[in-house]
Figure (cartoon, rainbow, N blue to C red):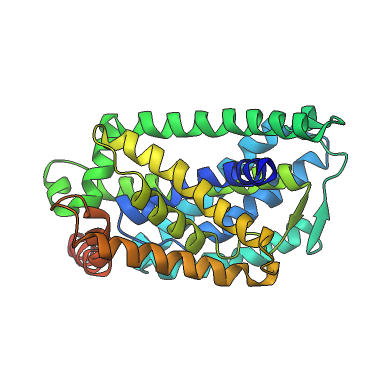
Length: 319
């Protein structure tokens, strides 16, 4: 049981920033950004290149995060300048920057054994102590990120960001710059994905060019799980933060449990698909037993495509 718990925390905590970034686009903006997949890999690639040149790991994490965030700005530019839908712009980015990541790593997989690592303090003989140190370090980083983004969402900028996701036209009529909010949301989402990629690399001590594949879909599954499990009253921002944390860890728990039950690692993508379908089915089922207003997440999912088309039309009318 302890192995399952530590495995969930050690492998799940690094994914929390990426799930939070996906929440910002999927929930707040009602959109999909496939750039997140390659941003995860680019974050890992940049960190790998820097620590192999003996740069300190914390600085490497910061540079990797900012570099991945810039990919979100490029996606924004493609969307605004060429009127390419965000999902298609993200697909173009994920294809193009895959080659950049491969060129950066120079080979499909690179070992980081012996390179600077924020988890170096966990290199002790006792495995339980080692896991505890890893969880403490990763937990500190993740809690800092969750708190920082949570505080941002409570500021005027954060309120404007949330408002544009609910009703972009109304937000513009109140003086909110919808383009700037789109750029901010995509920058944050991809920066957080890049941070997750860098943290994963630090934890597993190697980088792989395909490590970001499926990050968006897995993250959406984690978001749905978090919304399904966490429905507390009180602050909306606090609920978001808790739901993201619980969803990411629950997702990893299910995958690790599947491995321990004998499911081959090659079948984990199928497990991810099952998680996604199960979460959607469970939320739809809850609509029949919960009072109105408690199933807003599934209404959001059902109206996602329609809202995205409405926002695209509204933006096109302002160009």
